[in-house]
Length: 159
Ligand SMILES: [Zn+2]
Image 1 (tube, helix red, strand yellow):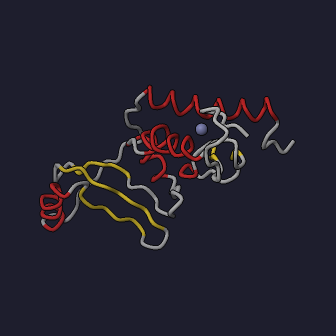
Image 2 (cartoon, protein in one colour):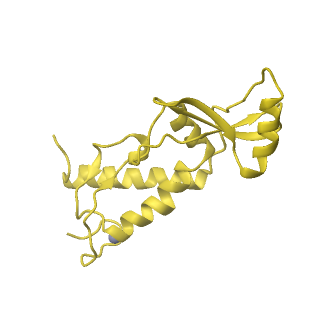
């Protein structure tokens, strides 16, 4: 079978292609082995999906909805602690509960100092973040192309 992206037939193709990334919770909508070669699959994961998954908008969305990545980790949500004037990371775990820490090592000392010196405070976590439209367009284009492939070829269709 030829890869639907590079059209090569002599490249390794052992992995399944997730139409929607596993990190968005998708385990059932996949293209079967052989449809996308491994180099193209890796390229799509690194250059098309990862930039979107790493955006604050989608990290916070996944963190807020407790959507684990394929290693079982729920992403940090990016937030801000006005009292400490530092960026913070907020994470929810079903076993550990809620944890909040400085976003970067540089913010660690002022954040800890503020927390230890305060009886109360607040953390703001944005519901939305900026989205790079080019990154989003590439991501949606990949999904649309793969869905079109399923409907045009019936490969991977269940009905
Ligand atoms: Zn390919």
